[in-house]
Image (cartoon, rainbow, N blue to C red; front, top):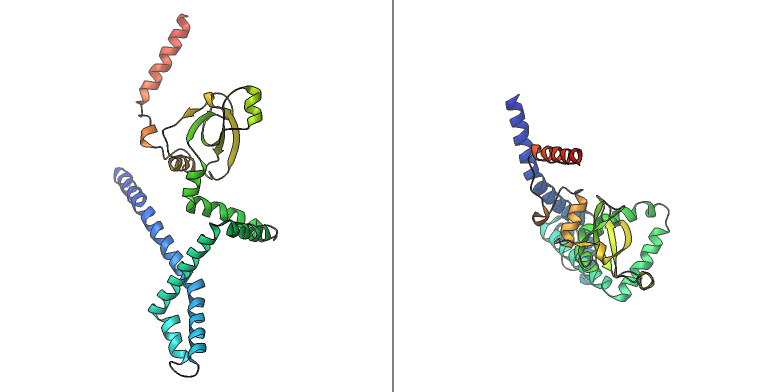
Length: 248
């Protein structure tokens, strides 16, 4: 039994170390193969047709060009690089006001399509969370702890603003607008306005707060991790509290 437990412990430990690396490599390989199979191959075929159109009947025949650009490694690399440049151009366009307005129109069309609107929002949530960390960091100013959903229960919150002026003027207090992220999907959550005095500023970055939420609290920053007390320590404290109550 001891040998079995040791084998299981070693196996799980090795899997925990190797699995993130393997999955990361697999994602990049899959992305490369996806671009090659769905984008690059069509770009390469377009290059073949363009070259044939320019050179006319002279020069390399269509079969030779196909072997170079569609089947050959050099051609595959050319198509892959063109696809990367195209993605960069799209990103640059979306950084402009006109590009964002155009993309909003495209998204409105997608969301009005019955089948696409059932899939697109969820895929977008995942990709936004993975690929737009810089925008999230700029959106959130700091990480705080707030008593939510009731007094005595503390939640991680991301400060997004200073509250609404009307509320602040009526209550005569300084407020913070805080997003309470859901777990394990922190890109959604609840927006609350909390008096600043009722929040605790945490020594955590926005990325650390997201990791904390995604992992359901398992991944805690070293600066915020409490030491693990011996099992008997809590029992001794409880017994001391009971004896104090009885004496009183």
